[in-house]
Length: 92
Ligand SMILES: C[S@@+](CC[C@H](N)C(=O)[O-])C[C@H]1O[C@@H](n2cnc3c(N)ncnc32)[C@H](O)[C@@H]1O
Image (cartoon, rainbow, N blue to C red):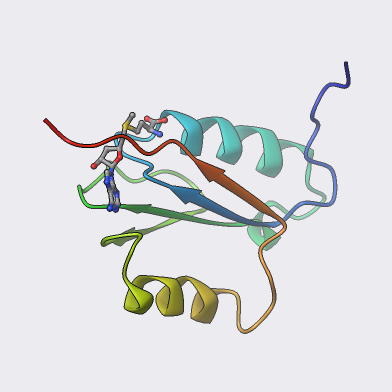
């Protein structure tokens, strides 16, 4: 089994991200291994708000909506995400 270092990964989407455990791991791992931590862009999407995290942009929205997908894509200025994490579960 290989250990994920995140080397070279700097465009990431974390779907269903609140309260933010995976976003925190991604932020620490990817920014920690990057030559330039500011080059790492992580977009965290959830219906619920999250506490701020370094290098993580939060989008409060529904992942099933086209408008949410468009907002994610515009954050990467047209480039594709290199990693998508999804931890969705229904509320309640
Ligand atoms: C298991 S929790 C996620 C835990 C999170 N990944 C973490 O690492 O802390 C599931 C999340 O899915 C979100 N969720 C469920 N349906 C959603 C939808 N249609 N759009 C966005 N988020 C959704 C809920 O708001 C909830 O925060």
